[in-house]
Length: 88
Image (tube, rainbow, N blue to C red):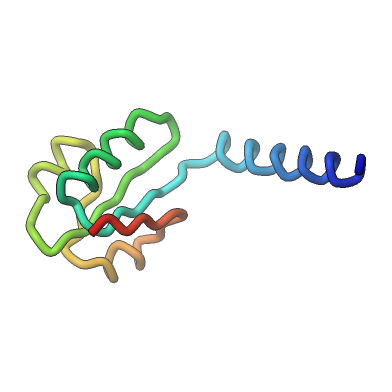
């Protein structure tokens, strides 16, 4: 119905407004090969900050990639993320 179409358009407008006016923080748990691929892919987008956590120390690589690295998932979550991806 036309009411549903209007609601969908309103929702899309709200999402577009949210994403264009602020940075989205994406957290990745697990920074192995696939986690690094995801981080690289997300970093190509304007308005995205990528955070990652891993049991292994990838802090040097993460810094080179422009990724905020956390040694614990709990610390990363406390820093605030909008989207959480588990890549283990």
